[in-house]
Amino acid sequence: MAYDYKLLTVTKTDRLAEIVIANPPINLITQELFQEWMALTEELEADPDLTVIVFKSADPDFFMAHFDVDLILSFPFDGPAKRDENPNMFHVMCQRLRTMDKVTIAQVEGRVGGGGNEIISNMDMRFAVSGKTIFNQMEVPLGILPGGTGTQNLSRILGHGRAMEMIIGAEDLDADTALRWGYVNRTYAAAEIDRAVGRLAARIAGFPVEAVRLAKQSIVHAARSSEAGLQEESFLFQKLIREPIARKNMQIFLETGGQTREGELNLDRLVDRLTEI
Image 1 (spheres, helix red, strand yellow):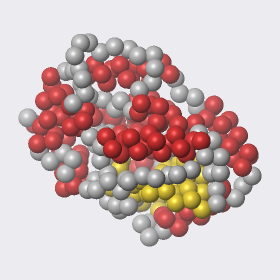
Image 2 (tube, rainbow, N blue to C red):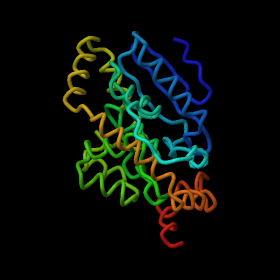
Image 3 (tube, rainbow, N blue to C red):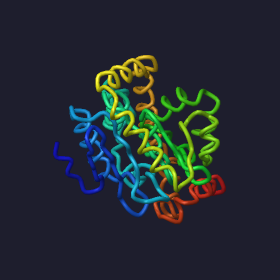
């Protein structure tokens, strides 16, 4: 496997791979980063030599931000939204993470939001830094909804009420609350998380390969997501981006500090301002 990427660094040690995301200043999911995620997940899925994959960030303050709002604003929206029986490319990429025969682990030390949070919701385990890690779904204040598996995954993981609070409330979710809600496996101090997650990943990588793979397969089958639900999510996202208020709010978001490092560090306050306009 080549694993030759510009924004994603892949290090393999025996049956363990470590992926480091580096797309300054906030690890925004730009077109380039998304294309690399697509290619990476395809390559990881096909790699017969891996058992465990740990995803982390080169930036301690940002694991990964949301999808590029400028890019969303450039989506074609002529004509009405249509239901598509085929999954969109973001759904395809997330499905690979959820179902590949490798254990996928998110080591989230900083902020993760929007599409970045949707991506990690498809991973098998999530670990966070107590007092620092922040999770956020910021789409609804912009006039859209999470269109990359978020409405389906978060309701499955968190339950109806908490998914509603996270998605429709759109407030920051701190690491300790996420632990109580069952969204993260464990929280650690910043100085301890790398060693703790690395130890767990190496432990799993040392177990019999087929036992790990088939155990994951069985667990995934128990929590199988609905294709119909994902199709509906994709349709409703396409419908919302055609609404004038969504395009207006996304533009205001960009003009008032969205997708800047300072603005994204205070993302909940930034989107709150949209309700005041």
